[in-house]
Image (cartoon, rainbow, N blue to C red; front, side, top):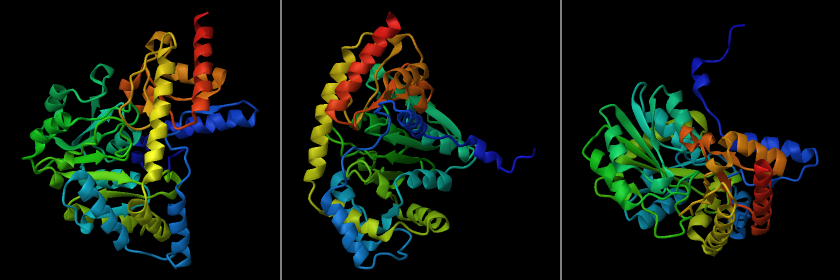
Length: 392
């Protein structure tokens, strides 16, 4: 039978988190108790003031088309926020608002990367990076993030991989899935290699920028000469527990913003109007809910790291950001996929294999600690017993 699908569809990947969630839900429907540590979203409710702003906007008539790049109020709020937090001057015309932050990833690669060009990206890393690189016919060049280097960049390796064919470098800090955080030194290595090249861009995924436990978030856009070469990707899903609202944005120079806006017009028309007004309130309103959430994540981090390190065969570094741990399970005697399947089916704990984030994730699991301390402790107990059962 002749396929109706374009060849390019075969190159698209997926997010294993949603597949594991579906399997976990199926087990729950059969009566099995599952602890969910697979999904990367805060388990907190969206703050009340943000929800009220959306309701107010609905009643005020924000139910129609708005400018494709975003409503002026939100673009101005984002420009002000990025200017302050990244210490660069951002104009509202350099902001494009999208339904979730993921479209910035999609649009930036689609708009800027040609077939055959090379894109460096973190591995293990968010799987959509590699998926989109393959989709446009470019060559994915993985940057291995190794445990012995705190899941940061190997400077000499990166410098060797930046070639004449390099068109884009994707960075993610704090990082999914490892919780690693890039230092200013790491970013300077990349900046020094490309600052004088007009043909290379950086896509800096900073969606976890507010969830940092030690030190401060560093953006490559803040380094001299790098603002014009950087597309900052950020959004509201993680910081404000707004995953279902689908609200994100990109910050980039004006000529890039115009092209990304064209892609918005051709795909989504615009981002939901009343949701954008909620975004204005999120940025301009009180931030106490964010601080409270981060404090809770910090407590959970201590519990899960300590608990995993007490399980024979498992070791776990303390993440510096985001809400994931990336424990080494090489001492368990199973592959990442085998062990994650075993924990789901035998222990009722849903986690993701490290290989869901690339080949360099083999020997690891990604575990989200966006769950209660009570459930994390229960999961640790189940994992410990499951490992003991394996070794007996």
